Amino acid sequence: MTDGASGLTLISPEGTRYLFDPGALCLELLTTGGPGALARYEVLHRPRDLADWLALSRLRLDPARVEVAADELVAARRLRDALWRLVCVRTGARPPAGDPATFDATPDDLDTLNRAAAGVPLAPQLAPDGARAWALPATGGQPLASIARDAVDLFTGPYRDRIRECATHDCYLVFVDTSRPGRRRWCAMERCGNRHKVRSLRARRAE
Image: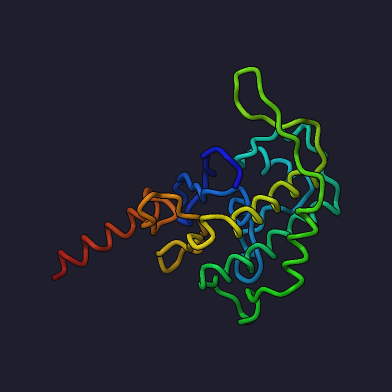
């Protein structure tokens, strides 16, 4: 998995902002939308949208130095949807969908992931401050290759059995539990963790 802890600032349906760290670059891509009911969260409408999202991801790419072509945007959405289905195989959970087969992984999904992983990835660099950086400018296909390779590392690595869906019944965010005890349940404590605490408190008071 891509090194470096970070997180994405998401907005809840109630309009509050919170930090969500899925623990892997490839799982960050799942926050951009997806198949089935997840299509309503789609944010990758134009090539520029992908470049802007890459700036928010843990890659922290300068969007002005990433050239995304129209076919690369299509490839990004195809990779993301394939990742959703492959992740559901691991979690055993499924977001809502009108067609039960929407989140069934197929050989095509595996081919999509492997083709993307075979592309030319971003080239790592050592920044003057000692931090990890990426060689730019880059095409839109390069970060997609890096994301796909991150997924391969995740699915074949020591945390492959720790890919989980948030335990809240109406939250479908997916994360990899990298905590030592392996007991992470929520997408974010400040979001679903707190919601669970409030519900539990109300239930105890009702009793």
